[in-house]
Every structure is written in C-alpha cells, then in structure tokens.
Image 1 (cartoon, rainbow, N blue to C red):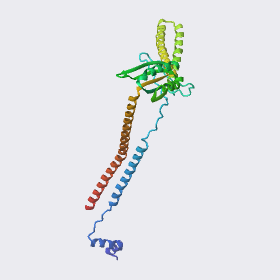
Image 2 (image 1 turned 45 degrees about the vertical axis):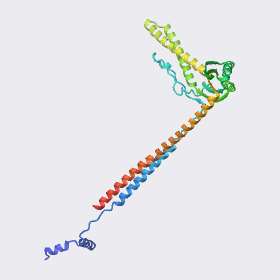
Image 3 (image 1 turned 90 degrees about the horizontal axis):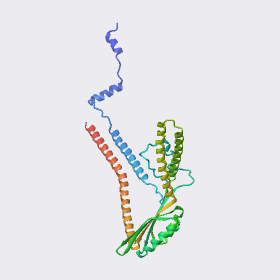
Image 4 (image 1 turned 60 degrees about the vertical axis):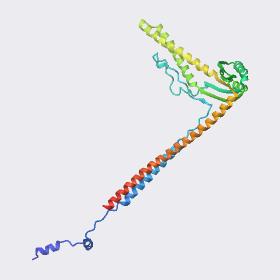
Length: 332
C-alpha cells in the first residue's frame, strides 16, 4: 500500500534546471538590482524638440523675408476710386434713393468714362520775367477756352520772388496747355494725375432719374387723393423728394464740371532760389532714403534673429533640464 509521502513525491513539480542555475547565480551575488536604461530616450527627446524648433524658426524667417515686399504702384495713372456722395442727414432716406449695388463704385462696361484730371507745373525764371510770364499764362488759358481761377504774385525786397496760378482748361486741351506753359520758362517739376469718377457720376444720375420718377408718381397720387390727410402726407413727401432732386442736380453738375475741365496749378519761382532748394531737397531725400533702408534692414534682421534666439533658448533650457533629471536618476 502506497504511503502519503510517495503520493506527494509523484505530484510535486520538478523545477527547470536553467531556472535553478539562474537562481543559484543570483543567490550567490545577493540578488543584484537591475537598472532601467532610460537615458538614451531622454537624450533623444531634446534633439527632436530642438530640430522641430529650428524648422519652425526657418519657416518664420522665410515668411518674413518673402512676404514683406509690396508691388510698386505706377504713378500718374487713373485711380479707380470714386468719392463718396454726401448724404442728407436731415431727411429720411427712401429706399428708392439708395445707390445701386454690385460694382456701382466703378461702373464697369461704361463706354464714356468720366476722368477728373489735374496737373502741377513748377517754372523757374528770372524775377524780371515774372510779369511777362504771368501775362502769358492768362493769354494761354484764354486761348484754350479756359480761365484763371486764382492767381498771386509775391514781391520781395528785390522785386517779385514767386507766384502761383490756378487754371481751369478743357480736359481735351490739357496736354496742349501744358506744352505751351512749359515753353515759358525752365520746368523744375511736372506731375499729372487722374481719378476715374464714372461710378460716382452713374450713381448720381441713376438716383436723380429715380427721384424724378418718384416725384411724377407722387403728383399723380396727389391728384387722386380723396382726404386732406392723404394729400398733406403726399405733399410732405414731395417736399423731401424736391430737395433731394435739387441736391442731386448740384452734385451732377459738379462732377460734370470737374471732368470737363482739368485743373492746372502753376508755381513760379526764382531760378536761383529754386536751384538751391532743389539741391537741398535732393540731399534730404537721399538722407531719408538711406535711413529708411537701414531701418528696414534692422527690422528684417530682428524678425529673423529673434525667433531663432527664442527657439534656441527654449531648446537649451529643455536639454539642460533633461540632463539634470538623467543625472539625478543615475545617482539614485
């Protein structure tokens, strides 16, 4: 008969020899503690962060250098901007008087454009010739069916020292007038500009037509009015519409006058004083231009270097803290 001891020996598991050998080796060395190697991972993270920061700084620098230039706008060309028409704040605005929407400020497709033209001319001459030049300016304006709106001559200690003339000439005669005026004396400066006000002209004209149609409709309604209350209400609206028509007529005449006649401003200066002033202005322009170039370079350099310095500081701080933590774990 089998004893309990024999049964227990049969069911007792036999340990793996390799496991037994490993345990004996550990027992012989007092079970040494294994350290987890996390230092390479900690070192790799700062490098990735610094690389990402440098890439971000490079993108910022490229955007600052590439998007800072603006295309030059050509001078002495027609500006497609229409001045705002003053609104009457005292009267209630009727929806019929609202300006047309959808491109009304430019009026594309209009065959006849309304251009407001102006020019400035600076003539330098001997003060003894000022009287002759002034008379010639009046004569040229009269020959071109224009007129002199305002004129002045300044007299100094030694005679006339300067003058100014504000002329209005037909727009079609502008270039011919400028050519004749330029032949009177030495031209020191000449500029021309034009503003397209076709959108404003079309808007005012359409609103005037709408106001006239509304007035005709109100007059027909006034004839058919039955009660005095209704008639008085229609008369009040007729007064508002009549004042609006009067204002729109004035605006339309003003736009027509400004586009049919060009403005020519002539400045008359002493040729000696003008030469000195011209040299001084040129020197000042050069100095200001140099300062602007230096200031622009400093701004662009700061825009590039500051992000790089900031990213480098953050990366250096991150790496320093990571190394400090790694040393603390190694000592622990």
